[in-house]
Length: 520
Image (cartoon, rainbow, N blue to C red; front, side, top):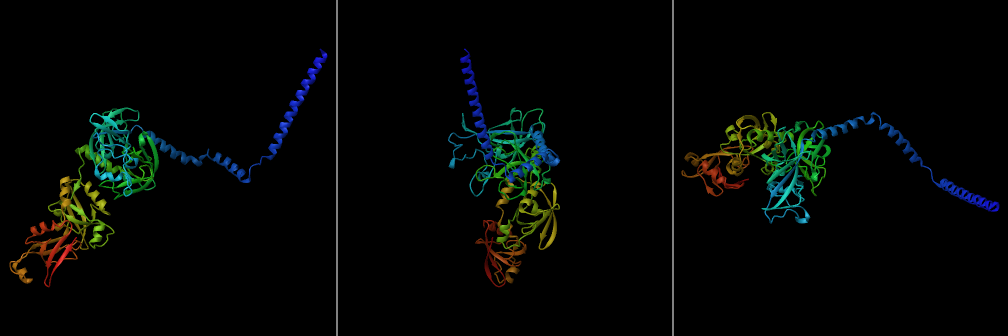
């Protein structure tokens, strides 16, 4: 028994020694390995020291201003959450209409997009897109296929009026508005303005929290802005950026381009959503993006809030948008250069004046240079067009005109713009665009020019020095034919000139010769 116990004890001690030896061996290996691990470099040690100091700095007032900015962003997002809505537009189409799968796998345009906007959906020449066209899958309805488009909007009154883009709702057979608490309401269109791309909707809901409309005139390049909307159907998405530019004109998006440009991320589905300043005020309605691929490229455009609010108030008051009309066509810089007119540093040339229109009644003539209206400088054709549109019909506006190097102040009574008046004005040209006045030839004048007493023609009575005909005609000359037509009165002269389609060919006689004159 004792021998057995002794053998057991020896065996146990041996195992213990072996285990201990093993531990010592591993420990030695570990120590050997540890001695081979390189320590931190001098650069790393310096970085670690800097990191420790910086970590301490993060907890003090060094980032207080950044915290305040973050707090402002959070407060704007919370303030606007109840006011920003998503808009689902359903448009019926014919069974054969393809909703998706256009060339290159790109979605085709949804129904109802007006022709003047179609250039914004792809292509290399006009890389603009209206970011409200986030189409869902086509749905099969009893009358054919239905395409669904998603956009955004913003509540601007407690009783349910909503601002959005016209292209979000154009052609829709049904509009569904979803609030931040996921309540859904069918919306009706109160009024639209395709020329600005604004629409006003109405939902019947209570307890709504509207957003405040700010003054976009105060927006400056570099100001922080926030965009909220439903890009790609992701409701209440908040992005931020700055105002990249103001008064972006001649972009080719609407008839009255005057956009705020921003680098806040705007994507399909953002259309109609608000662009906000850090006070939580609407300063723009997000409308378009410049993009080759249809996504965010850092260039977005928003309709200024002052413009959108003007449309809103006009629709609420009149049921439609009321704009001013004076009956003139302005001359583009290219047209002025073509006619050899001096390049303007300020002001806008008047190319033609509608007969019997407000401008003619007020004394404005072709070739006049509009310097200001009611004291506000006219620095571009676009600004003049927009400003006239904002004038109230029935009111009188003061036009400061530069004519023959002299400033003249004229009073023009504004009329209401209508499609009919615009169409008539668009066809005007010819005689009115020439900038000359004529009177019938008399026997005495005919004799002075060596013509027969019964000769037909008209005498040039006056030539506007800034008109297209200024370098081609002189007062006292006789016009015998216009576009190959013999004329004998001012009325016949106008009728023949208006057939010229932008080019008027005159047969002119003076004291020494008869010549052909072409006026464009």
